[in-house]
Length: 164
Image: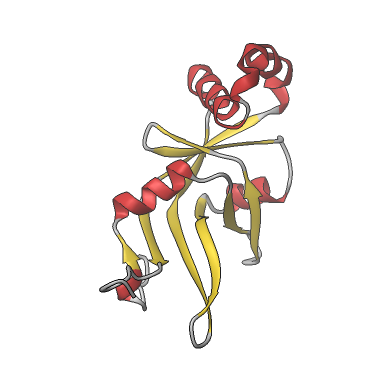
């Protein structure tokens, strides 16, 4: 169960938080190992079918952690701007998704996720995507992460009042 947000005045709607994920470039995925140690890693991703899809190699610490505990926390940061307004601060927007990761074993779903990733990051090279996906198919895993809980917050510049 998620904790209550301390700065409720900075809460953004779940729809806006999800929009940050849909428009974001990269995310950070946090996992927990069998030994209870946390691990966070930046990932490329795509949102589709009401899930977040990632791809990765077929071994490594994050996969060991997912085998021990499928629950993950995903974080994305939208725009940021350091400011000085009588003190140091930052305008920002960020969102968190909590959910469970499952290995995608359906070939159509896996292919669709990989094509969507190619479209997101290198749309100008889509003519090569299918061949590259086929070449790396056996050594590439795809995980779908359920969107069980989404939240976000932002600190934005206040609109000028009366021209100030």
